Length: 178
Image (cartoon, rainbow, N blue to C red):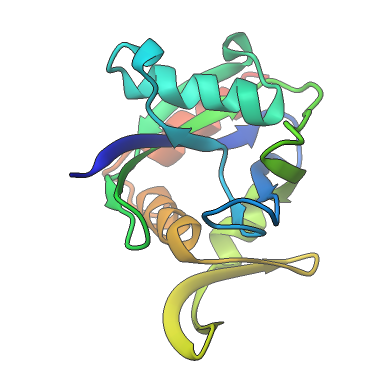
């Protein structure tokens, strides 16, 4: 049975409007050392609400309080291939402030300018052990973003470039009001 999870594609409200990514610790059982978006599985305390899950994970993983986050959209649910999670990605703007990692799960946090995410995401082959798989890929400052996060970015870029979707207009309205 699939477990519900949520992630936040958080866009910092001040230029260059960086998208927040985390680098997972190498000692973790799943996705060790990979780059991802803040997020995780739903806890019983989330009351069955994936937005609550997303905001809790933002606080736990990168120290961003819910009061700094404005959710402006939701991307299509993605079924993770490697584990049994059904992941709901939320798009949000994030008020400026410090980002602090939870050192038990995360070794780093960084941002990639929104412009680069939208312009530079591409399809590429990624080596996974002895296998090669095709994945959406974004390379930035010697970091490779791919896999589930790459698929979320592809859905984001598609929504961003679709004028009927309205996501871009909602994000830009939030960013221009700051």
